[in-house]
Image 1: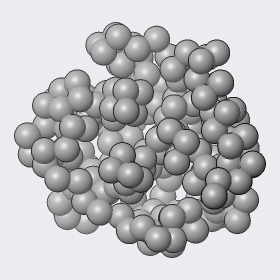
Image 2 (image 1 turned 120 degrees about the horizontal axis):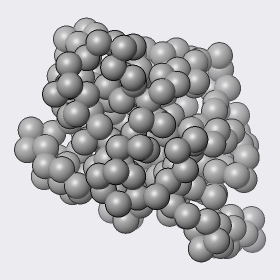
Image 3 (image 1 turned 120 degrees about the vertical axis):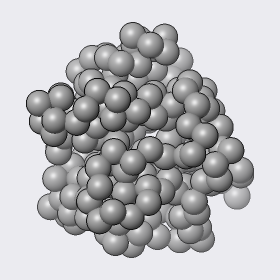
Image 4 (image 1 turned 135 degrees about the horizontal axis):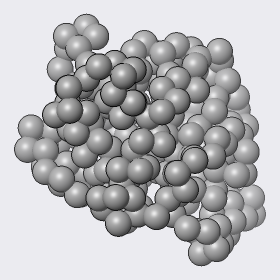
Length: 216
């Protein structure tokens, strides 16, 4: 049975999408991890999407806290960092309601997040596990085609890049990109000195995520 609070969240989420344009926001979380890392990444991704896939997002993304009802204003939340992540019980409940109500969370491991994320996601979806997306998942062809799956942007430990997700009723609601570091590829060129073709791959995959989240 759905609680009255869950119904209220659903109403708020649905109403917010009808009164505001499609935008993404940066998720701020507790635990001491640097949720604010890669400061030029998301603005650059937004500018790329606006220029290439027909979005009209605000070039200066808002920051929202995990436990705030403000997250329901945005169909897509982006989260990144290097270290510890902590969701309180109320944070986890808020994020769960957001995701089952139609929201989408992209978590991009900037190196070192995986063990913390795996623990904290258990608070949001204790009944679910992260599972790797198949190569033919529509997120790899939403705007640009990636026949080999998630691109490798930064080496880190030299392991293969993985896109892992959480599904609710066969809908992908959460995407965790690991050993790819898309956000570094979105940053200003001078930050990491990535070659243009590498940055282009990162931005194109980011555009796929945006398009998929906005349309599904």
